[in-house]
Image (tube, rainbow, N blue to C red; front, side, top):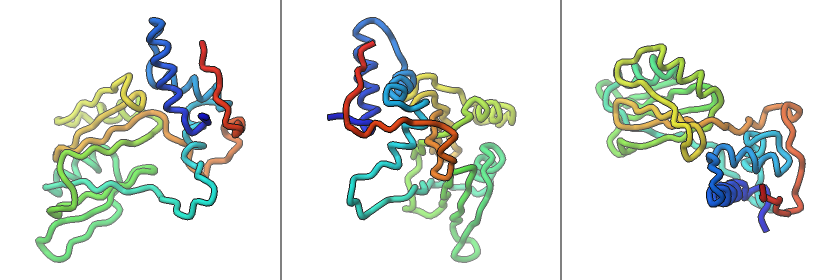
Length: 205
């Protein structure tokens, strides 16, 4: 029996059912509908609840990972990640003068490791990031008039509205609206009614 952890599957079923009735809905719209049917204010709240859910007795809990992206030119990497995307440079490391660079950059809740070391990562990787303020980010990036990228928003991406930005080394950062609230957020900010009985809501329009 489905419960709130099956929300994405339920949204997919709803979208397919409505498409069969000639009622087109985007993936993001069906996620919002399912969230409300499960007693949450919106998809962000439900996504945060799903992220915190864990099977009873689970001994291993994994934390957020840090993607490693391959770079080939320090100056171009800093121009793109620091000057264009607005990341801060946290630290860098070399084993010695003239050796490959390894550094960490971060912005808000996202950390990335950038490496010149052969074998650390393959060019052409994609990092998918949940975020808020996707329109503001696009406006910020377009306003910088970076000559190699004028990113647009894909209105119906796999995770909802998506902004993809390729770096000079073939890697892409795909940011989608709908970030789960951080665990430190006060629970009073948004409401998600408890519905742990495991019952599947009626998705009939």
